[in-house]
Length: 212
Image (cartoon, rainbow, N blue to C red; front, side):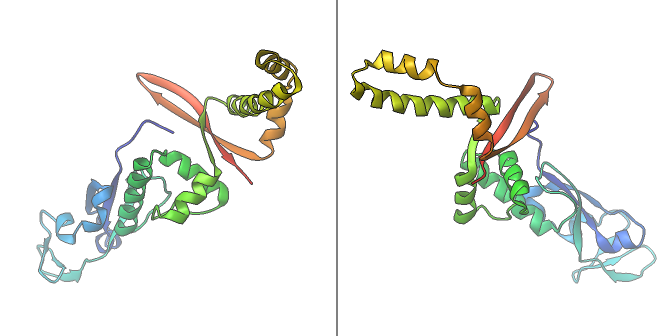
């Protein structure tokens, strides 16, 4: 998890690229699907109403196919269509609106062997939520929290065995093997480390997922 990077894409004209000319520009990813060929072709290249590019020598050629040749801030690899880039950007915004990290969703997708979703629909969100156990400083911190919740529940049970609440809590927490519990718990989970590295902040942690 790096510091939030602006989501943008470099959209180029494929016909120009195939002719040996790099024609394109950077655009916000959320607007990628709305970019037109007229926006790309400027200067000595003109585009008529039919989408044909006319250069200074007067030859015509259809230059309608646009392509994302580079991108920043999107949780995908490689090139894609402008429409796909916009769909991914919209998914990222929907994920963040639900209070989740886009990077955590990317990590989950890679673990289960799926592409990053082009839509944050209900089945996708629920599948992620079933697996996601949160972001923690370490897996041990997560395991200790789970153990504490379990032991607190057992404390209530011990009270029925003529132990006071403090006696039950002391017995549970003092004699419990947290390290062994964390080792066993790790078999049912997977993690991915994240890092924030900026001039004013450095922090690391792990995303924790249930694997069953």
